[in-house]
Image (tube, rainbow, N blue to C red; front, side):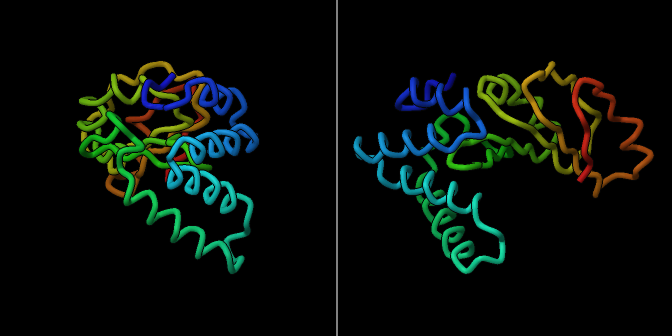
Length: 167
């Protein structure tokens, strides 16, 4: 559980029901009542975006507003805000992590694995694969193959407990 979240009980409900928007919306309501209107708005916008088709007229405007809110509120990530590691928000909460190199992954493993996440990616892989810890709660792992040959990718990836989806 994240010490960064201002309401651990509601955050636990979000984690316990990852596909349900109700706990996320309850968290947004709590944030708004407690002086964090921007984050509440961000959560609601990301939920709205997730329920709209990409070509819907509202999709672009809501996405732009959510991106602006996120840019202006870097503090939402707390200690997770480190160089060469990017957390991606989904439906209002940081859920996916992208390391810009295996070096960044290796240097920040303790921090990365302290928090719930659905998947991680390393892009581009330009060094030998690190010793990845077990990740039973992960749904996928993506490793960009744009910087290396497919044969090198095949030889360097062997993590049988997790479905691999090269991007």
